[in-house]
Amino acid sequence: MSKNLLHKSKLDAFKAWLDEKGIEHRPARGEYQVLQIKTKNGQWQCVFDRLDAPEHYTVAWPLEPIVHRFIRDRRTATRASIADTAGAKPCDMGVGCDESGVCFAEANGEPDRCSKFGVSETQRVAADLFNAREVIAAMILEHEDGGLTDSVIQRARDIVYSPISIAAAPAPSVADAKPLPFDGLTEEFTEEVARLANDGPGIREAIQGALASCNAVVTPADSDSVADAAGASDKPLTDAQIEAGWRQTFSTDNPYCPCNLKSFTKAVRWAERAKEQK
Image (cartoon, rainbow, N blue to C red; front, side, top):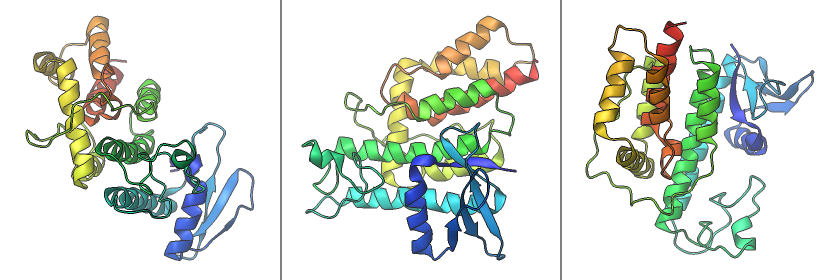
């Protein structure tokens, strides 16, 4: 089964990563092919540019683990370099830089937006959110054939790729950290999201900040009632209930909500529930 995992803007970085890891690759040789990669069994597998996938390249199963490693390695490297803000250094592809190594932040006179010059706490969290989004986007697309409706997938894409704006958000904190509600998802998806949620303090703080911020918009009472209606009720949901659930699920009245795992969990619940009623 082919899946859309590799964002098109990351192709050059992906090739450089393959060279770094000693993974053999060569230019495309067939229609719709972008790149050919040699797997452990000696076979050449292709990265495709499908017409129905405008934002991501498509890979088949043998290449999925390689792409996932690239995403994880890139996220970890970016987070580590941003955490080290002492002194000047070569551009490390931090916030405000593109894949070619050009630092737009430097050109625009914004020294706090690239770790070459040091970053503020706000920009560090923004970078963590950006990297978290990359992984979440891959997971969303990986489960396109896992029962999610087209409307859920499209809305999830909109959330993941919406502009990051956290300047007005409250400072994230893990002091009141609580288990994230990952019930209702597949075991594989749950494990990956749980790993992401505990992979480094920056992402953990960002996720907890997202939960705290969204809880201020959606009251716990409303949240419980929607969760009960979506997961426990045996009665068919009315159009009004479904609309209310979707409005609550995708509330984006605060800066952190566009990267909120809790909201996406609810979205999956509502999608599964709506599909059962068709």
